[in-house]
Image 1 (tube, rainbow, N blue to C red):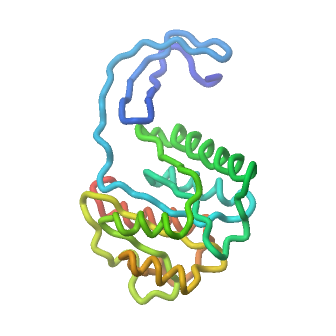
Image 2 (cartoon, helix red, strand yellow):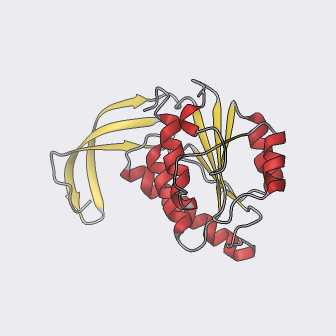
Length: 213
């Protein structure tokens, strides 16, 4: 707010698709007075994109959430994969989830998104498999897969679920469970990306082949 001056245009959203175009009437420390020039209601983006993100260690989780939000993920699910180094339990789970949600909110504002992404509590393999089963298209990132994300047929509607494993990779048992639920394995490219950046790159590849980008 310190950088805004009277006469400048700003946009205000409720995070659920309603977007108000406003002009600044006055700016005071911690307070803005705006005049609303118009309000629009944008439809929910299609296809919806859910990214299941295995929990990275340290602050790489928040970095992953920021990147995914900027790219356009609609739901970002913390996944307690078997090989995750970071473990969310008890009070730590609540604090960690709050940091992810805060990172998503701030990134959504910076990106001027009219729909803010949802960040639900962490899920186990069974819950993730349920998301995969209900998806129109589900992709599990796997650097050893034969097919590429860039070559997959992408639906124009419904829900795309993208599963990003931990730094140590997804276990064979997890792969089998996700494949049994209908997921397709696919790789990004010749290099192996960090867990905190792989999801954003894959999301960009997928969304670039839809009307959303």
